[in-house]
Image (cartoon, rainbow, N blue to C red):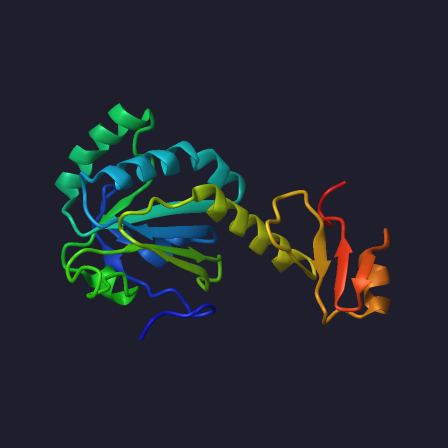
Length: 212
């Protein structure tokens, strides 16, 4: 059965470029971006791993850590890391799981037989500090992921966890938010003393509450 939003992310122990990893222990109280790659030494994956390495400071600002996965062995991962450094200008600075036995791929339903019966698709899971799955995205093997979008989603999730707001279409950090319908106007007066723009009773726009 496929994993769904709100499910606890399955735990596992698997070898990686940083040695054996027990996933829940390694995750700790961080947000986690777990993402899979069809195969080592492939062009799209090479660009993605370089980009995630470049973005490590942005993930750290959000108390987030990245971990990748491919079904190839650790020795191949380490050899590939040299190519990533050479072509992308950023060396691999996060663990890359070696899922040769497909244990993690099967747990997270990363192999889609009608697309490819042995290689993982480009799955992305955002997992919160309670180990709950908060986002899933599946890309075809030929399409590189948009990691600014993944950062945007983490920003939104963290904001909505702390305040009774949702984020509208194309929202980015600093933009106006929506007061969730479950909050009454009386409650909203206490929570958002600066007021809001009521376009409809169910659509109340408010300045992002954690910004000055």
